[in-house]
Image: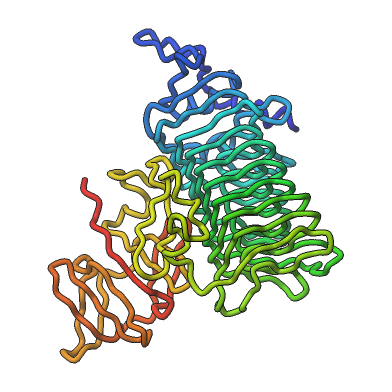
Length: 486
């Protein structure tokens, strides 16, 4: 069975790299660091299985939507497996791979992603994988199934499903480094799930630095907004803003499971430093549930980290600190504000020292930071799924979360002293709620100002990771972006 799925891609008629390297008109690389193979088609991307130790570069964006029909509907065949991991270099050069499809849940399949398994010498960087759908049995992710090397400046959005360890960017992270990566994903729901996270299902002794995840994580055992289980790993300068939900039926101390806004389970001497989480976390009674960490055990530590207080379920930062665990410095605050990131005075000042975070700070709660690097997200000047309808809205919520997407309405109606006024969304620069949470002030693009009570109770938004409905009472600020120019 394993041999069949490992070799099934041959039935696609994929051209090997050695064949397309010389197409009779121009040379397309030799696979060395100085002269890497140039990937310009999805078939050539699949052909990386021919040489797992070579160097590759993307030379353009790829439309991978056709992979949905490959291999009888199983889609793209992962590059590398535990016996033959990918050990080379893949540089996306800022390009995107759109519409990747892998659906191999019906078999006993593990290590399911664009790269099934990477070795310690592997380097993957500067790439976006967007509108992806990936489904498998264990160690499932959009970019890497199990990563043992280095992944940097990578961004993914889409859907990931599994039944063991799975996450948005990588399924399992081991030994290596994830740096300046982000994920906007729907992870789960599934009926079985041991470790699942918005960025990574598990972190076993690896380092995750300067990363974030948003979206939703829904499963049974150990769901975390960023990482499911941190087992002896190091997580620093990271945050998660997505909602997390567990339906674990064996909720009790004997099972040592949890659910957390950032990490579900921190154990084995794991270390979490300078992090925060803003999403809502829910789980059954008896399960350790925390705004930042579900459970902390086995000499693991949490330092200088934060979660939001005042949410409906009034969660503690750490759901449970077990005997034998290290210290857990996690403070519940009403907002992650500007003062947190001020040099020489803010508790999270270390975030700003490398110049890779884009703050867009104002005088209220912080607009959740994004990377200044063009490779970690939608690149300026490019149309994306969430921009396809024209202008986008940036919605800043009271809890510090941020949502970006295309609204389902073309106008907002307000009741004002002048009567009912329909305000076209394209004319609005920003809409801000007053302290009474009922009236708004709308600043129009031409400088005019209007105030009144919105006739709309909720706003439906098509985001990169889901279609959602946001009640207006939860919105602090709404900003309308200009439509993308052709």
